[in-house]
Image (cartoon, rainbow, N blue to C red):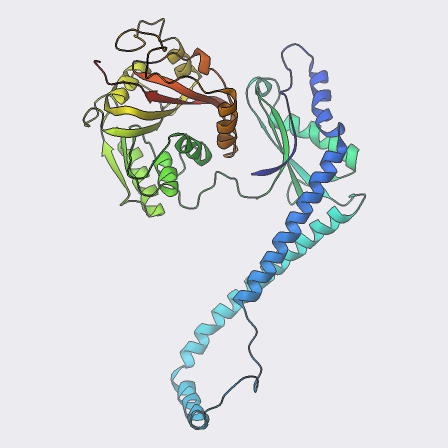
Length: 434
């Protein structure tokens, strides 16, 4: 999650020289410096608001003791018995006093740490308040994917942007402990510059013990799946269970089942479920995705990350996997899949491969087949997915033919770091054999 400074079209790296591309990168800083100063002002206000909240929470957690004689009602009998109790406690509780010394030392450490954090925060606000902002230190963090990543490294981009910031605003670079961090994301869809609002990544989850799929991507997939209370949600290739965890946190009143053929993945998934306290909410099975032990049309929603990459490869054909998912999904149910470029291309070419469009071999103008979204609907849903800070834009839906009774509804291109992928949503239009 970050404070947006600038968003524009992607840099053109196809036919221009490196020097021209470097100039285009510098224009992210040099064109419209007022947008930078405005963002710094908003960021400073957020810091001050956060500091005020911390002060209020500390004051509520450590209320001042009341003064003697202020709204106190003293019981005479209690005054007589208190000295006796103090003598008895001094004799019997000497070890307890020694044990109390450790929490005091720990409290001093926490107080010192809070003071240092406040001092750093005050220093940042002071530097941002300075009209010249000469004392403001910064660091640039870059993420490059797509064509730009094949031409430049993140370090090269960071160096170019950093030099431009020093020349434009007079800031000082500090890679270890900067006042300000600048985030740059360059890909084939957009160029984004912003200031991170949190130091912890948005994908960080305290309840996930072993990370698998990025949590923001998993949440985006679950949000597209139209999950309703009482539904049967199934991930036939669950891996470490990240998708089911994100869905169960957001929609608890649902029956979740995850399946995988790998013992190690299932053990990791169980550890994650246990760490999140969801081992009673999600059931795990060891089965193959091509031989699911489920009745036909018994599942409401299927969400799955189709394996790809060097570590996990898909041994079965994507079309065979989809046919089994299609069998267990009921009419009107949804499938949301994460596909790499190769899988996505295979599904686009399935019409030429001889797979019928549906059981009757009819095109998508048959009653019951869902049409593509209107431009307005696409924009609304794109905004929903982009809130996960990973989804980028919709593309390729017009090229996706139906697969059996599965009709494409939405398709979003997302970034997985160096890898580009697609979140594709299908809906089952009719029963098989009709």
